[in-house]
Image: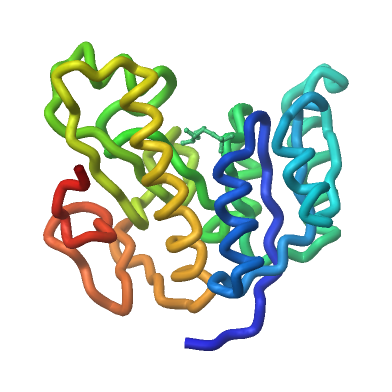
Length: 222
Ligand code: GRF
């Protein structure tokens, strides 16, 4: 499907490997997005360098310069809205956003989380998955709602947990999957293939038997 590139703003806090995966897909002509701005709350975020190297405008809005979270959120909203994005992408953005922010971008605010939601919401997902002894772990792309890491799931990818996995080895395999499914979920959004029905996402009008879509028909990726 060929659609006009949609304006997108991406928010980061750190390494920026998901940002890079998205940028690479755009540059390869496989993702019809125009990344208008990358915003980081952290001036030292490596992802800022990735954006700059790709010729994408960047801005730092340092949360430490705001005494109230609402003020920080408002400054973010102002910067984002100047770009008139169709979609706001959280790519490793490590600040909790307030209700007003989330309401303002309802239906066009996406996040990636390193677990098979609804399992392991919150932080340290890889070590928690190992401690729980699960056989499968993975990653989820979801729309953001005021329920932290609880919004409707758009895409999931699974990895099998190996007996000798450490949080480091497991997170590396999950990250590979993140880089695969985040650009894909963004493409589905831009191509208008996603709809929300009763709190669940449909792709091309279809609901999968389990929550969220696996990009590989629910087979476990080695
Ligand atoms: C990823 O694991 C993502 O799932 C989580 O934060 C991490 C960001 O990594 N939300 P990066 O900055 O994209 O490399």
